[in-house]
Image 1 (cartoon, helix red, strand yellow):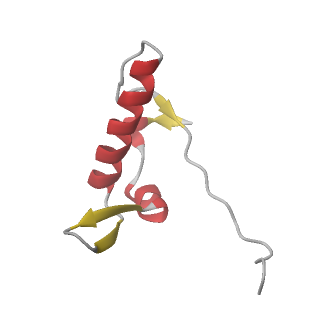
Image 2: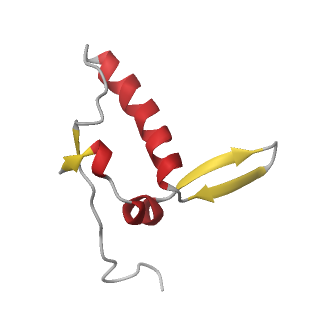
Length: 73
């Protein structure tokens, strides 16, 4: 767990986020700026439902998983 403000470019790149551009194209966005924007919006909504507010100092969980056995290959 680390503060939201300390999430790294590497983590944002590995996680990636999809964004819609125009009517049809979907782009995998991997920048830290986009990651922060998307997650701040989401956390703000979720926290408001619990009567809380977003802070860049709040702790977030950044996980990585290793694929050991691919399914169906």
